[in-house]
Amino acid sequence: KAGVTQTPRYLIKTRGQQVTLSCSPISGHRSVSWYQQTPGQGLQFLFEYFSETQRNKGNFPGRFSGRQFSNSRSEMNVSTLELGDSALYLCASSLGTSGVNEQFFGPGTRLTVL
Amino acid sequence: GEDVEQSLFLSVREGDSSVINCTYTDSSSTYLYWYKQEPGAGLQLLTYIFSNMDMKQDQRLTVLLNKKDKHLSLRIADTQTGDSAIYFCAESNPALIFGKGTTLSVSS
Image (cartoon, rainbow over all chains, first blue to last red):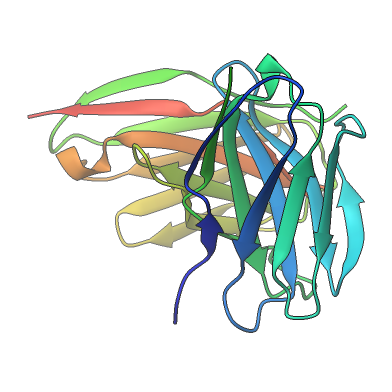
């Protein structure tokens, strides 16, 4: 079974631009969560999607948005990029049922904002 | 608010046991987790424990939970150089709230 895939793996953008990151979950998984990882703040939850609906949202500004498609693939978008948005963005998928929230993580997209 | 705290570094010799500690704040977390991150890789779930358990053993890994003190620990027996990585504990509210991670360095 293929794991979680994220594209692109690396991205360089300049301040003010916008960016879209993609995540394909494990086949059969209906829940996709996004996390931002930085040296200073560590791992922070961005949002979770389940069956195309945002189920949970972290404490990030409105410049960060996401969506999920009917095939469970998810995208996240960051508009008006700031230097502080440079981070590793991790996507995780899970079955989404109640009980153990066993999330499987992708390798991440490394975003650098210049 | 929710907060998960871990010590930042641990250095051990190959063959010794490693113990990584974590404290959490959300007493309503049903499950608590340990994840491992190797350089350049995403996170890998190592093990988890249900909140009504005190201990869980899985091969070389032992998780201890003190719910009264909101303290979680991960013990790695017979630590190997391949265990060198960053270890994160996490609580679920239901999104995962992670600690800052403990860097485990194993010397031969």
